[in-house]
Image (cartoon, rainbow, N blue to C red; front, top):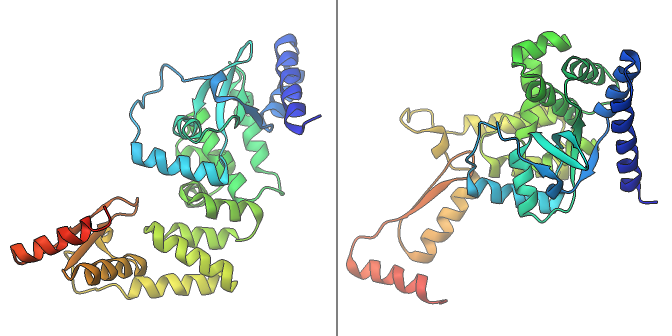
Length: 300
């Protein structure tokens, strides 16, 4: 039997047993077991929460996430509530669900909740975090689940799990790293120290380049921190008007120089940490403008 089918069968059994029992101790144990299980559910069986306050999503960011999911899969599961009859309602992860649909994913990984078990859910998640065998990404996902599903702030979460607020924040930041880096955390290819240092890089292109150096060269955390420090200290310090989002990574500068050389004109590229930006091509005469237009049209 397919392992996912076994998981699905076990999930149905768990949900059925939770519905049947009135014994608080038994129900609590079943909820704990359910909380730590991941089900694979067809997106078509999941309805969006009608009370979800967020209704608009950036189309470009969704497309980028969909491409990432198509290559690496959905790393951070969504959370749904069992509604009965193989129907589920989304609790958190609408952006991930939408991107999964765009990517054509047939099944998405999901944590399944039952209604009216908030306290037991919180207890189960906190207990799960205390396990010694969790990797940094699993801890980050558990922290995010507690905040999303139990409406906790970073401060309240730090009290629940007995960690400094900065520790909680450092873990949660890992979920903003590109999927490729998250996969390496999950697989143990890089440590929490590496991940924390990489998360401090705002520029995604530079972040991925440095990550590749870590993998290819086997950089230690200390060596990685020195590399990042060298990038930071190499930025101009006398131009106080320059915005961080306008700083060029080595890759962006190389692209700018290549385009400028090809067109024979000055080219400027502005790019923020999210990957959005603009390309500006300067010209000094109509002849130069026509030359640029001819170059851009020559392959059409």
